[in-house]
Image 1 (cartoon, rainbow, N blue to C red):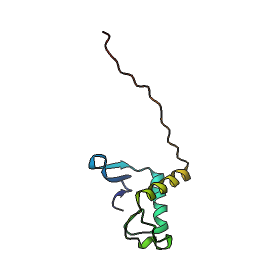
Image 2 (spheres, helix red, strand yellow; image 1 turned 45 degrees about the vertical axis):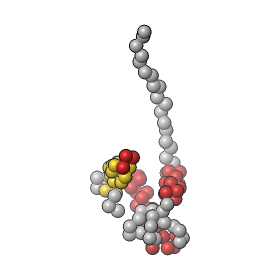
Image 3 (cartoon, helix red, strand yellow; image 1 turned 90 degrees about the vertical axis):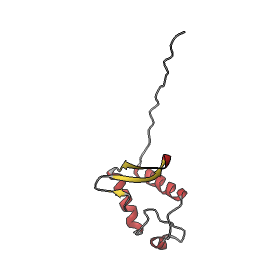
Image 4 (cartoon, rainbow, N blue to C red; image 1 turned 180 degrees about the horizontal axis):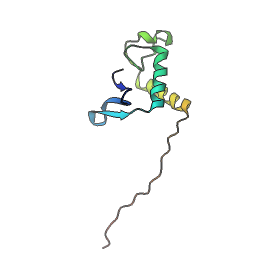
Length: 99
């Protein structure tokens, strides 16, 4: 996978917001999970190949999984590892001059 740089622990995100490419950090646990997922299907080109023809033929897929399928797969991974996103509420105020 040319978009995953395991040596530098980065993922190359193509055409992100603003049509710009980005390099984002890749946590070790995420890399390990992605490796385990790839080991299931071993598709030569896709990390998330289409499962349209079933799991037994996924290694022969000619295109990637649709966006909804990727989101579902990632939700399952997040649930499996027990990741919980915690948002800290921040008070925001604007200083205005007194008139």
